[in-house]
Length: 383
Image (cartoon, rainbow, N blue to C red; front, side, top):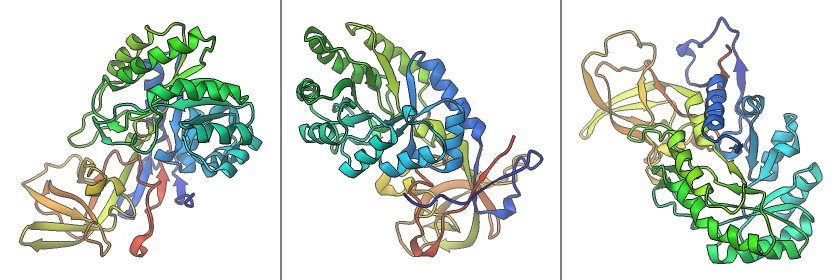
């Protein structure tokens, strides 16, 4: 796991740091708490487990823990980071379907006993490395309406899910549940309900065989707000989910694993303009933050997430005449383009600071030091 970005907290009187200290990420823990409360209200009685991969900065993990949320980890280093913050193993689900045996053994020694699987090979490995553990089988779901598809790599066919759970039981594991994932940044409110409804026949069949499940895990994919991607109300998603759940033969605890939706709105990026260049295709603003050290999902091959952006520090001032700008990062790579045709005040100049909103998900966790440009520090907004 990458070393955590340096972070510091500001006293309550310093509610927002001076933008002239840019570049930096600014984290507001209150936004995390509000997002977790939103899930609790929309999915009453469901278990909420934060997907650690979305952002594993210690300040973020502490805020999630203090809000009473559980955690979905995908590696032993993620589990270890949680344990190092005093988070009990009973609050951790090991949710990736294919895992190194050594990671599983380490997690078991630490007290983690809930694991995902999607193949007979993984079930056999868990029986040896985590005897008696609870297992939930990940089943393929339709993720074609999401920005990022995941099911080509993971997920058992629905026809084999029942066999996998029965094999888990035969090998001494606890057949605990079923799960699916509709991708990341899903765009249809019906996707989670449709995914759950596709599992109903499996649950009925298991019930007839005397096997009752403990959970159905709806995974993540709950969308955050970006340019061109308005968020779907969680209450609308939940309406379809609970309609599908009513078709189950007995009550089963539902589990959700949001990552992006919990942390995206909680972090803002402040970045300096280091150069303004007029080219044949338009005017370019070169920043000290780009796709490698700060905004990876802005890469075109990653779906080109468009983050809301404005000139920092001018909230009360009239915007003035606008001009479309291309925004680029500082590295020598031609792919390091954050956005094109962004409307900003026409007088943007070197030394001005841009403020990117909703950048909390898959930014710091994917940032690197390419070309020697380090990720900006994370600062924590005290309240």
